[in-house]
Image (cartoon, rainbow, N blue to C red):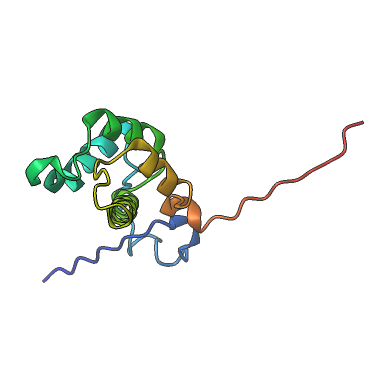
Length: 135
């Protein structure tokens, strides 16, 4: 009998060296963050249900998905799903405040959400900045 152990992490840098030493978890399959094209494909899948709404409610233009994908560098599929859920919330609030409000998804809706949601891979990282006086 053989036993296969599969682990997943987005913080490889904090793993104990004993875990990844020879004879243990010695094989790695890196999964990089999605490219712009891959993010666009992810967004198409996540928004597929919107294109089937009656009367074009919650429709999202393909050009908006491309623009969001281009601007979402570092975002994973889970990040994009979170962004989309927040965008749906914005649209619902807009519709609730104005019964005749537009339910069309706008690029600005995505950008507003993305200003507040950092990619998961950057959330746990602290950025150190050193300032010095120039001579």
